[in-house]
Image (cartoon, rainbow, N blue to C red; front, side, top):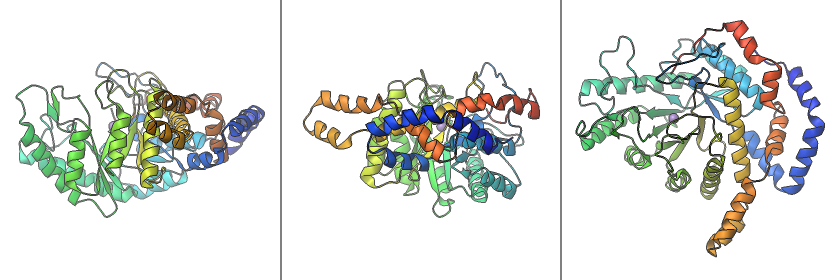
Length: 424
Ligand SMILES: [Mn+2]
């Protein structure tokens, strides 16, 4: 289904007086507001194809109904989100969950919804039917070269499919590691992984990027072969200029200072992409900004500082993607909330008085540094984000309109209550 333009217009008209009053106040308070709005309009966040169905846990999965049954329906769902918020103009695909033979048809559909193809994701953390070798003991790190070759071939196949879609990046996340001390020779596991990644890297087309994603633990519980940003950066540096580290917010040990990691990776020119989510304990994959909105703001503050220092374009310099999936929310409502939280954190970080902060840092005025950051963080940026969305043709309040139009009910009527999206 698609939302009609007149429905968005009617919704916006109803809220116009209230919005204008709130935006006028925000504009008066923040003289740089036009500059911020033009950045917000450019800023697009990739939606992962696997977040459109209800995620499961190892204990169970509770389908919400009306989930997309095909790649085409996933693209349509992202199109709905993008129609409402105008900030979700990209899709991140996962192979083999999103396998198709009709590349042109899928591209046409994405184009119709104003979507481009963000990084492709390979999968060597599950065995697929008919596969010769098992990934039970790893893929690119495996002690058996035949298993490594199979995993390399899969990644190269994902690149081939990505080329057909018009994507320009491959994200490699490995479940490789070990569950018990002594199970693995760390050095050999690293070297096998590096050799495998080198073969994948050699298959990258011109202008493609390889994102090496790290994760502290799970599914392996003793060691992970790409376990933290140091290991990812080692791989990226050894591979070459097309290889970058990808930071997933949920892939750190508790209380890790992610904003500092981001800052240093940017300094090294090795931060390639981002997976937004939030967590309380580990890789919880919760809605971005739902637990630690201040951390999200601090991360954006470092991102902007680092990108500006290097002259990197905010919208196109890095891959911005959501990676979330959980059990209890309507996935489309969850994604609308995540994108809103990301846009708010980005806006608040743009509001930071960077010159004053640099002076306060130079003077060791710790109190002032905190005041400057928290002044921006405590600014109500909602009307600014809303204004950017309205100027792009989106809805004043995407979530409210989604509910008013009974989108989920219509999806269930069209697709059925028992549909289950492919993926986790
Ligand atoms: Mn991720």
